[in-house]
Length: 146
Ligand SMILES: [Fe+2]
Ligand SMILES: [Fe+2]
Image (cartoon, rainbow, N blue to C red):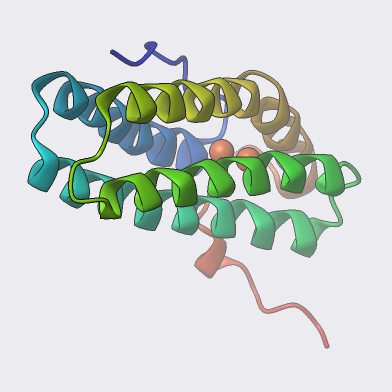
């Protein structure tokens, strides 16, 4: 069972994405407990896609606004991506191991916990000051001057 993560960081867009990711993490935990491998593969695929899009949204904003702590933040994203790849490799096996998947999920959960408790609130605070209180999606921003 995954730990129930606190996901609100103070930015509307990021909070919505975190809520979706948290639901998928919970679904993975339930899928492991009941050993529904086909279902796990579907949910893991969605998690990879949602997390990739989410990290990409944050990384676009960091770059656009010159976020000074981006290197440390990107290390957190990379660590999460590595655990996702480990999970996908386990799910590619004919008989994925529930203890292995549980350990992977716990490691991923710990990284997301750090992201949502520390890195993302710092980013949200920076963005709020940089672009005003109204959260917008990355695509709504004017293009960067080249
Ligand atoms: Fe995030
Ligand atoms: Fe992040």
